[in-house]
Amino acid sequence: MKKGIREPATRTLATIIVIMVMIMIAGNTAAYSLGGGALAGNRYRVIISTDIGGGDEDDIQSMVHFLLYSDLFDTEGIISSPTGKGRKKDILEVIDKYQKDYPNLRTHSDKYPAPDYLRSISKQGATNPAPAKGYSSPTEGSKWIIKCAKKKDPRPLYVLVWGAITDVAQALRDDPGIKEKIRVYFIASWNQKQDQNTFRYIDKNHSDLWLIHNNSTFRGWYMGGKQSGDLGNKSFIDKHVKNHGQLGKYFAPLKGGSIKMGDTPSYAFLLRGTPDDPTKDSWGGRFVRKKGRPNWWVDDPDPVLAEGGRPGAKTVNKWRRQYLRDWQKQMDRCKDKIQLSGTQKQ
Image (cartoon, rainbow, N blue to C red):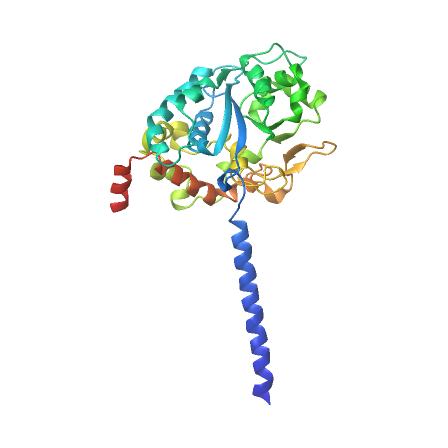
């Protein structure tokens, strides 16, 4: 009798353990896998507005990284939008490096944009902050945003702002109707401080703009997450970027040979995730809707998601292993097939 009583209890306990293990495995899989986005075959229209060549080398890092993924996007513009140093020539310098790796990259995808095409869509934007009213005069960059927004294409145009938001504000002032077509992802923080007037103008006059106001979430790209072994900010560069084509050579010494790339989440948001809904997970972070704004999202204030006091940063760094391993594969595209063969033999 005792044996007959114990066996069902044992089997029940074993069943419970198996179910718990399966739930844990499923939970871990869900936590470290993410679908959707450009890497799933969706093509997004993008314009990049950058202060590259200014006071921080991380814009150069992000531009190198973006070009490695440029076969996945329909890039329609790259605008120099500094409030000080940095000009279109700094964009062209990175494109020159890209051109040297372009033959190797093309062996992996015929959708990589030609260097001359990228040069043709590189535009100079505002070089000074706007006056108190928040706008000044049209620039080559602001006019290009309007022109691209008005193309007969049903897809939204993502304007990814890595520098001052000056040209976006000018474009909105000159043609408010473009709000129906553009989606702005703004890496704010220091960039916002460079031209507060334009941000105040947008906040006051274009509250219905589709906007991700990323003030601190972006820091998860280089803060926290999996940083052991070759996934560290420096160790990854040493092993997987250095000596990988001209782009790798160009990238390696930037920021002391360490990953920062604070602007990268703006398009990583499009690489993996659900861009139509910023409240869902993506490589570029997860956000909450700003109260009273239909299409304005901000950093998630939940303390659990902060990294080093930076709200929302953990919604990016939770994917660190995924996005670094994917970048590793992209960097290998820059290497000659002879180089790759030699590496594989080792």
